[in-house]
Every structure is written in C-alpha cells, then in structure tokens.
Length: 221
Length: 291
Image (cartoon, rainbow over all chains, first blue to last red; front, top):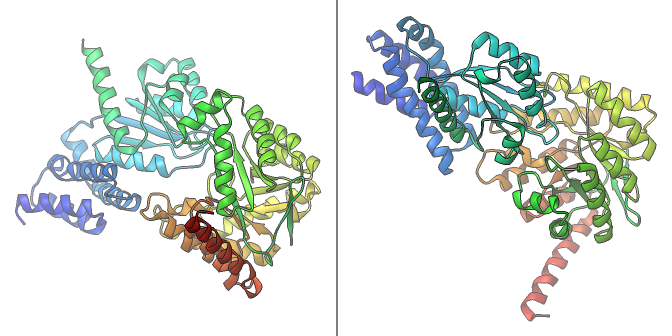
C-alpha cells in the first residue's frame, strides 16, 4: 500500500471498529516510514471525528462508537511512545472520573473515547473518585481540564464538594472544570461553579477544545 | 416466596408462581426539564398524566421518583405520594437514595410500600434497613458495593449473600427483599445480559428470592430499543425474574411480558391474556362507533 492507501485504510478500519486491522495497519505504516503524527492526525483523529459526527446525527450507535474507540486505543498504545520521542504535543490533558458514591462509567467512557480520538491525553480515574484523588491527579498530571461525571441526582452534589476541595487546595485557577452525566443540566453546572457542561460526548470534546483555547488566549493576552 | 405490596385498598403479590409484576417507571422528572420546572413551582399537574399513562398501559405498581436537583426532595416526594394515592389504588414503589426522602415517603404512604433501593454497602444498609423494618415495607437491594458494579456472577452472588445476612440481622422477612441482579447495557458489553440472566437463575435457585431490575437499561445506546427490551424480559422471566421497573406505555413490551406469563404457566388457560384481548377489542369497537 502506498501512503494514501494506508491512510485511507486506517481511516476506514477505525471507522468500522476493526481493532486487529487498525493495529496491523499502524505497524505497517510505521514500518513504511510514516511518522506517528501523520498516522494520528491524518487518519485516526479524522476517523474518530467522523464517528462522533455520525453518532450526533443518530447514524451511529453506542456499540459502534465503543469499538471504534477500542480500535483507536490499540493504535495509540503503539504510537504513544513514538509520539513522545518526536516531542509532538498533545492538544490537552484531561483528568476524568466518576464522582464518589457513583459507579456508572459508560457515559464517562464514551467521553474518554471521543477525547482520545480528538488527540487529548486522558487520565481516567475510574468510578467512585473521592475529592482527594482528583486533587492528587491535578498535582501529578497538571491537566488542562478536570472532568467529573455523575449519573444520579444524589451523587451530583459531589461536583460542588470536589470543586470546593480543589479550591481549598489552591488548585482551582490551574484547571478548567467540566461536569456531565444523565441528570446534569447547564443550570446545575453553573450553580456548582463548573466552567463547562456538555450533554453528549461530541459536544464535550468541542467544548473542551474551546475552553482550552479561551484559556490559552487569556494567558497569552 | 411472596412479596405482598399494598395500597389502602389493593394488594399486589410478587412471586415465582405469580404473573409478572410491572412496576411503571415514568413518574420521574430526571432528564425532563419542563416537568422539573413545574415541580419547582409546586405544580404537580404533570403527575396525573404520567400516572394515567402507566395505569392504562398496564402497570401493577407505580415507581415514584422526585429527584429534582436543588429542591426539597423529601417534601416533593411526600406530596407526590399523597396525590398519587388519591388518583389510583395501585401500590407505590418509593424511589430515592436520599434517606430523608424515603422517611417522608414511608410516613406519608398508606399501605405497604416497596422501596427503591439500597446497595450492598454497609453504611447504606445500616441507614435504610431500620426504616424498612420500622414501616414494615419491602426493599429492592442491588448487589454492588463501594468498588463498583461487579462484572461477574460470583461477585454478585457474594454481595447478595451479604445483603441476605444483613436483612436477616434486621429481622426483616426475606419475603420483603427483592434483589436487583443489575441489568447493564448490552451495547457496552456483549456479555452483560448473559451475566444478568445467570445471576437471576442462581439467586432463584439458592434463595428463591423475588427480583426486579431496571429493564430499559439493557437497550441503552441502541436503535429499536423497545424490541430489545421486549426480547429481554421474557428471557429474564424464564430465568426467574419476577418483576421489573419498566415503562408501561410501550404496548410491545407489556404484551411480551403478558405473553411470557402465559407461556411460562403463570396465566393458566390464558385467562388474563384473553381478557386483555377482549378489553382491547372492546375499546377499539367503542372508538369506531363513537360510544
């Protein structure tokens, strides 16, 4: 396969969630001398963007999104060390967790997939994440954004608790805080002092990019 | 083993030898912006519509959840229960994870309620079970704990064992315990329903307990959800599921459940099935003649 054929095959197989094919094509592309950043930015990210767009239109369903995400993750595992060597910059670091008291993770995982698919470095803290663990992760990974997920009206109040603890630890102005989950609304996100809320995974990615840009513009201004 | 629920005037029995118990699920403002705004403004008119739809759809019990963020949930729930009991004689399943809301709900309710729900976490059981005991209510318990939703049948059985022991410690009859074997979206894990079905089978075999689950969850993220739900419930029933929290507004799902009752010998000679057909025909005929 020549360069264009490889890119197209990677794009198509990722879109269809064919993990073994994506992994094989990634290795083939590397062996042919293609740069890891080319594989990521010209094939995988556009493919996941298309997955997100189809999902938003109602043309793609949850299982299709999950297997596309798995296919991309397999390729990323190979690409990450190579990308680190080339010094390519991630478009942002995102620490994500389901709040304490809550064990729901499907929505959170979908957002993680779309974030990784867009080129973010995602640190997933899993479910039942206590405030201390968010704080620890902010100190360790220095993320641009902290995302908190809650599926229950009874666990949503943890957003406020977490934000309060992050503020107390003196870290609030270092991170953007995004919240989401089935019962969450924009109104609620505003009430707890979050910087952003999105109703679905694709919107979350767009918002994450916009919030980072806004912040970087502010800093540079 | 029979779980008996009561309103002031009506009794519903859940059991492995009984027709399946449909717990209507839509009396719940989660994700419904307008309903939430109405409830905040103390406008309960939407409740009457939701109740009517679940009752006419064929619900046996009504699940009532008043989880509106940033409001006084105990007060809302108390008022909703009072209103619903004036509208229908179906028993109620009081749905909240806020202990004060359960307390107000149980104090307000006339009859023997079902409570949704408690997890296998020690601190949750120590909060909820004394209330259940005090009011002589029945309780739905989920076999998950601090660490998350157990992925295997063995783990779910181990937490169920712990729940059974704790319920016995509080001297609550096992008849009043319903286990929710946890139905997760099959679109997120191809084996999730197989694990749920095996858990149902083994819980029935080991303890003979009644069970319930949130039936709509299995089809999350998929197209034609109603068909997936309608296929899931009869399979779960044949493994030993005796009730489900589900939307009674969708005829295909209710019909699948009632047909499964007939097939599994829970509706001898099709008495319920045939009378359901007759009442549907009668309402069609009255529509046609304009009576």
